[in-house]
Length: 141
Image (cartoon, rainbow, N blue to C red; front, side, top):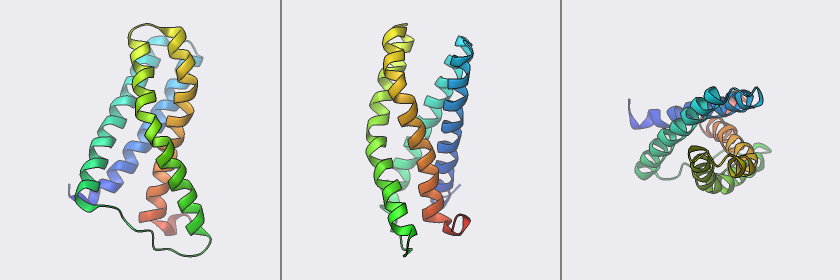
């Protein structure tokens, strides 16, 4: 694997994380507590690997300019800005949510998980969209 492979790896990890979050939500809705726990731990682990790969890539490459013009440009930057702002909240929210679950403080866990899940899910999905728009713009437009 080379440095140039990391954006695709990051997008894949984001997609897997988003999928695991959805599966975890389905598991808790079905009251499958152990399955929910395992899937959410896998989502956290996947996001952790993503974060390491993301930091390694951007420490080496820096920012990648978005060069497309036209209507896709404001769409891209709207998605990017919302993604960045919410991504800044995702790690602390995920850590607190996970901590409360592992300490079996389930009422507090549920209270914050109601915020964490949609924010984390949005960040996962928009991370994939940012990748596609930046590296494979012809896939969408």
